[in-house]
Length: 400
Ligand code: ADP
Image (tube, rainbow, N blue to C red):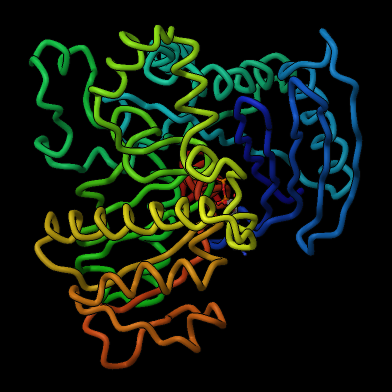
């Protein structure tokens, strides 16, 4: 029986899943994937095959019994039924976990000790970590002895030099774990590996990757390793995002508490749900909606997004000491020629020259031949990265 690996990426309102085959070979291939969205409001299940054709859709009425656990139970059952139909044996499940703290610099196989350690990191990511860990327990309960692997958003950045991880706060707070961790690590690791295949010389150089999705951040890669990134202690730092503000003077937080009497829950709501593109535009967190709008506040939201990307690009290039390549990825980075053009226009001082036709077509390489810095559009694939790690840990090269 041929083997397969399942991937689970569980968040506060959605659970994404996928199944990869070809585990015996170097390159895994997607068999099917899907998600339950709208958890807590109106959960909807949708699964597609590798061609994008819908395999099944289902909706639930929200109620006390329709929660993360019961929906994960449905997903486990659906995957089991469909992989059995295809005659595949499940070799393991890989999970995306937002926080590996300072304990993990690479993915690990789950056991009781690992799970207990990850539970200790819940205060570092209270909105995400519990949802990441829930499905691991569900698989333990329902999946018999299926081996599981956890892959962290923070792990790839553990190569950052100590100074890049420090806040200028009293040392004791740093010792308690208040430091810069960085996120989107699975995406950056995937891009770093892809660049090694696409252009091995550039991959050994000084590269900035801009992961511009609903969550957005940037990372400086030196010889393929992360040396700095724009996200810090939480996934709120750095660039403005769909609904998060990015870099913010801590004085603003003090002011909101002192002068406006805002409580913790109000601040969580403000910073996670009502800031960023949505906050500035007052219209939407979706870049496509803003680009189609003629409201000046929509243009201002796009403007501040681009401005801050350009500032961070300068900052990361300074840390790298120079720049050989800029890579765009994720929803906005992969799909918006207009945003890429605006970012590059303001970054010509770094030696970037955009090829407008290649950019409009969304080609892999979008710089002119004489551009000192090469510019790329590389689609990210965090799920494939998780599946690859899971396969490599569980099967190793020899046992495939
Ligand atoms: P995440 O995985 O963080 O939820 P994605 O990487 O899927 O986010 O990016 C989602 C965002 O990408 C959407 O909110 C949308 O604003 C943006 N996006 C997708 N397609 C386009 C497009 N053609 N033009 C501009 N923005 C786009």
